[in-house]
Length: 342
Image 1 (cartoon, one colour):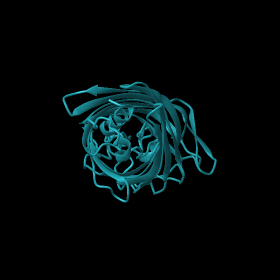
Image 2: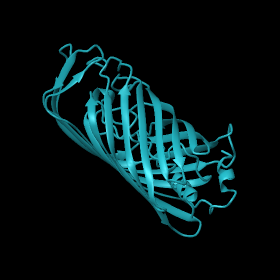
Image 3: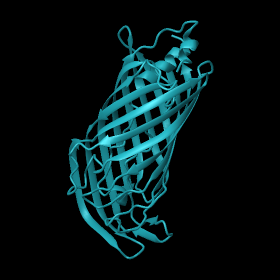
Image 4: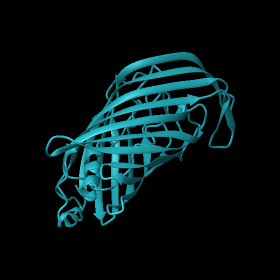
């Protein structure tokens, strides 16, 4: 199998895994320093077109979040507050998703659509007093653990290829599943509909095996009607770089930047704007696994650790993706021409 075919194998297998995993949420929306968008969703090869057809993926995600004693936060007007005790949360989620990629060009590009949902377990422990800049306080000394189902998430993409340069636009959002419980701390659902849209770029040189991807987007969240709390608009960038060390293995590094750019609002936003920020980085490795004739698997492992956070709990996460798809055609003299039609 040629390097171009190998790359397209990974792209096809990982298409729905890269769709959206933004359902690991704590209650209290951005008041608790979390958001609809989960940083790190997009990784290597994000913007490159794939082999048309159906793909299935399952992703195990472990997320650990901590806000230690005396952690400060800064509101939009520069006033400071503090956490005088601690917050601890974890999530273990098993994402199930399918993606269909059309063989028919759309606006000169390749269209794809993904749908996914996930069962999972979330545990939250709070033993804190959060003091805001105007003297408002939120105190708690409780814990919650719950196994439940996430919302249904969807994502549409449109990708174009010109040699080693690949571009993409996308839109993603959620359909509430009805399992959100405003009386509990542990929820895999944000409690409100939201929509995210953005664009991405992938540099991919099959001859050298060099690859770099970057995807940026904006998230708009509607108000949580139970908490009367509306998150501000978020800006996020996911990036990744990798190198093929053999024809079936690639290694690299991935990271993200997340910044809330407008204030939280609504009657429940008692601590002011509470704009969050997170910067994280971590390693990744991927393996192509031949299956039965005409099909293949792709296993990817990557992890992230926050280097800097503001108005958010510090997190680390582990992602294990296994995807199955139709194998791309063997490399032929016309293969490069076919790839450029998208």
